[in-house]
Length: 375
Image (cartoon, rainbow, N blue to C red; front, side, top):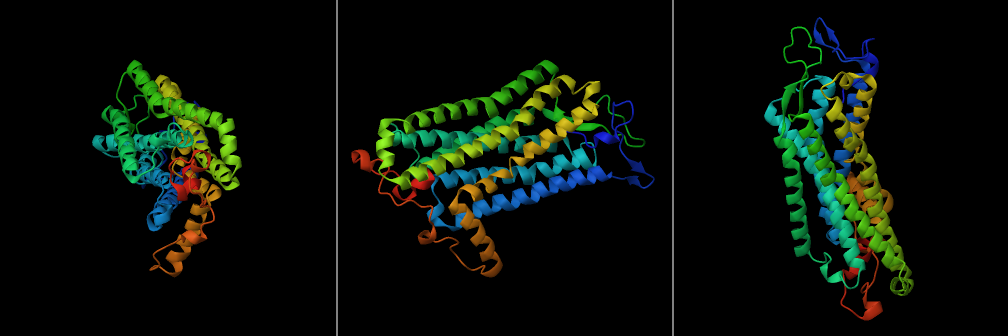
């Protein structure tokens, strides 16, 4: 992870000494500022994702397949914030060394990759399901029941755990050879990192990027290309033009999903680039260059911001979640015994439609009461 405070580097621009006093370590003002920044990320992320899970859990009519997928991502984000970020931030910006055991190093890396994998694979599953739902020949394979959702959710969890295990396995605590060792502190310079050779680290990093970033985005792009082709087809025009509510619901749901995917891609991109660059500079002089260190800090900040942005997107683009958040906060403050946070009759984002395809062909219905969430 990134070292902090580029202005604190010595004139030779090669390393960053740990501030010290007679009483021990004394953090700089910039160190405190960055720790406070991560504290804000932590508080907002935990609060937002907890509200997301609570809104879905407390409102039976909001437990649609889409919202259950959203809850799955929220749980993954909570895992990242609670079980990985605090220890990473403390070691990087407070102690400026890995101050925990080697086993805990593996655990933190596991939860980092697990949380990102849950988000990437869930967004991929949602995109595929959107295509299947909108494709009349393929709609029988879409996720239209709790049983199918449980199967897909289990598959996502299994893939996420499998994808997170390798980095956890190949990580351990080691010493950086060029990091200055503070006086009377034999542990200075220890870091949690991959313990592979440079060539093996490069292959490993490229594989991780393919699994977590490239392959999911390729699948998502193909799914949205097919969706776009369907929406431009004459069949879709006849179907959707007959009911403006269905058309509006379709556009809202696709816009929500596309926004989630775009922000994930942008925020995760710096970390993917850094994972490649760090292979070539990790053991060298440039590791402690102040500008490279600043870039690592920004990559880390974007990485943890992945666990923060989703509740804001739900609030802006979904009436269900916007009202759910507001009413849940008011409920907890004023009436903690209230059971239902949002009543279905007050949920204007629910589209009343007997079926997406029944108008066109008289086929069986597909999640009739939740077209707005499913499309």
